[in-house]
Image (cartoon, rainbow, N blue to C red; front, side):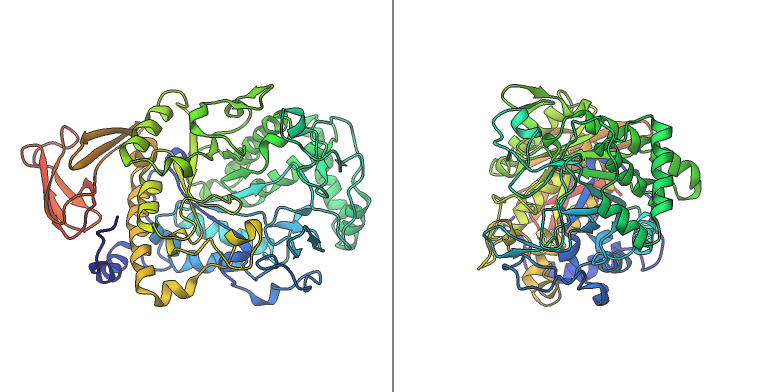
Length: 550
């Protein structure tokens, strides 16, 4: 979208004033469809520091490799951005944050300089929040405030592994974990019965043998004065479910407690293909049970009838594979193993194609092979070393392709502000994990133009289930115009979109999407029009038109 001009600066101010609900005012609840969600993914430690008193914990103060230490982001910082309407202005209706459970105390050097567990994937205690993230009281406030604005909360579930062994953290018992062999990834067994990398203890998720709690966890809980409470809760869980006291079921219990206590709406599940798939079948069953129980216990807090939602991270899965992931010696349908959706790792490559090729092929797959399920598209993330636009030279195109493509969309924190994914002096995935560039948003006019583009498209996506979950149809090639239509139960939604249009006056063919005389609004320019002889005329200084019923 190279034709976006300087009028965006003025439009940024006007758009913010006229379209955003006032602070502390409950948002209008729009029909929500997970398949078309506009999801915002953030690294909790790298997004916003709302409480500087919790920045240092467990003596994590040693010098680290660049971008590999804790930097202060926390739940309180996310709450601040919910309060000031940041996510609403982006059209976000799901926030996914990296794991917030208690992490290992120490760090490890993997040839990149010392690394601490700021990313959240090195668990020490699933039952407690890491103090660097905040408290459970903070989490309850976050969920409540997000829900009040129609935003769902998705946490990150790690069942495959614990944190590494450090100078302060010993290995879990051999009844719980294996430390070798290291995975070679060449077949099913060499993905599941192995450690992802050296010194990352792998939970024996294939085991159904009864095991005792680790002694360090017992001692920890006793010192915190909650041992009896935790054991009683575990006993009740195992009595209700009839599961053996195997490692995977302990962890499933601990993770689903966050649903029961806080009413979170979904889980993104980490390293899914590295465990036997029966783990996720059991996990989803307990997620559904606890979500239904939470709704029953909190009828006034229930947002809608949507089920608990699970998204699988099966590294390497792409929408072109349909419902199957191929291990070379075995194919697994993870949609039948506890998942509503899967992360689409091929979108960042597909984004090099033209709009119509992407939109039509994705719509076809989602409405045929994958019908009833969905994929989560992304163009950058916390661990993908091949993002679509690492140097941020195409931020407008990135937004347009991501937010207008069929499927759910994942904005990675800083996509909307062109936060660079190339950080000098970093090694590996650390380059993807710099702190959010808030100063650019405050002072850089070009960054503000980029943000406005993301906001307009994001709000349009949030307001129209048809964009992500509907059926795509090309109306004309030149100018490029298409429609999206969605109809399910009580939700009926249709939009018409034009891209790469001429500046100034333009005529958009509506076909049969909107009847003659229908009043329409171009959300991008804010201008209104009516359908005459099957066409709508818009005079704007933009090359994009987003038409909805006015």
